[in-house]
Length: 138
Image (tube, rainbow, N blue to C red):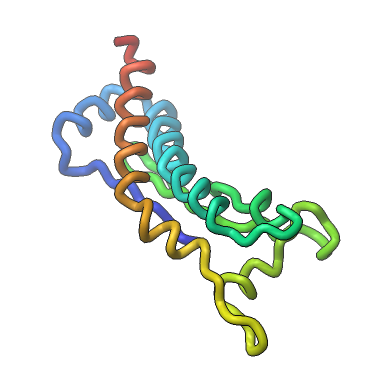
């Protein structure tokens, strides 16, 4: 899973506003902002993924990571649940991403992260500002 880590320590204005929030509100704000950034990468990965049945695209998801009042992580992953016939199991994504002995690689996750990283950070920053304003009632 490629992770987008947001660390707002060292940004005095944002750090002060985060300090005004309760511990649970701060974590929720950080988690939502990290997920907003990860959604940018998720959409790009879905766009880049090869489409046969659409199963691979549908199973590219955003996953929560760790979160504190000043740090949060979220990632983009591909669901692998149950048997191969399960609609929520795209186990074969790694064969597409990295290739096999008989099939060339057609990466879609790593290039998505590389091209959309800056846009994801901008979206996460915008989301955290909107969220703090909403929570503090501005």
